[in-house]
Length: 262
Image 1 (cartoon, rainbow, N blue to C red):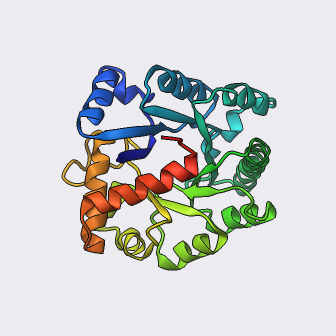
Image 2: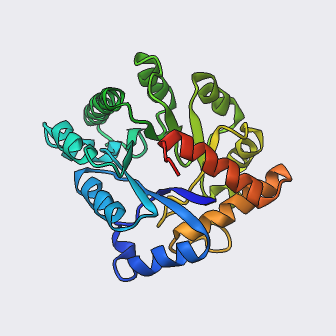
């Protein structure tokens, strides 16, 4: 079984051929795609796609860079969407301190806004007994501290993992997972490749984060779910394993994490 555990198929990059992209993924053997949301509108769009296609599941959540635009009652909206069985997780949520406002007060205000949204959604996920897809960028210590506040009581996957083995072990000790993208094919990503070599076989997923981060030889072009096969091949080379073994391990891990019953 091949699975893309993180795709943004509702993005405008797929507006002209979305159905063709999904069909192409199925023809390439991608049996499951998790469509990951970044705000309320995309949570609804992800659910609509998942309801239309048996091979799709979805998440709901407010990305840290969307936290400032979330309405005060956004948790009620998430609860309404989460009532549907196609919702497999809360995400992507977390902290992103990359490119904060240059003014220190404005930067602190944005950090505070992100942290409030993150805490609220972690509590929501815990209440709903749902796993969490984490987005973390330039906010490692605060992200872990926030998870520690809830005693790491929610099961998390750190998507698009590009940190090194030391940080990987910090997550493994907390019981969390990591997910690798086409970054493992980039020549300037030694930390991601080192972690792909070091991660236990029961603690990683594969993803595309499409339309972003297309793997070599498609780097710079639109990424598609079927490219997860190239990610699997790259991880397999690093671990001296057949790609099918890597794909099956990732898919089995994701099936358990997202609680897919098939």
